[in-house]
Amino acid sequence: MLLELEMFDQATNILDGLVEDDDEVIEVWYILGWLNYIQGDEYKLNAHYYLKKAKEVSVKLGIDDLDYISHIDELLKELEEAFPPELEEEVGEELNSDISSDSEDENKMET
Image (tube, rainbow, N blue to C red):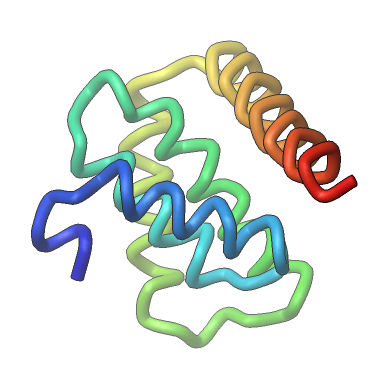
């Protein structure tokens, strides 16, 4: 619903929280990827990172019969044609450090 209302920041915050709780939910990674994809070119590398994670989780869990798996494959193909893998690796490292630092900040606040 937040995506339809174009409340991207709020959607991102909620989805990031869900990833922190359980990083093996394909739907969350997929929605994060789609959210970044629809925001335009400046978010395409983030979209690629999240969609790649969705694909990795689907392979890990052996899930390949969901409709959005084909959409993930379609988007990844398009994004991989647009960006070299080195750029995606840099974004992945930044996103991982952001998620880690958010978790560390929350832990500090709890203590």
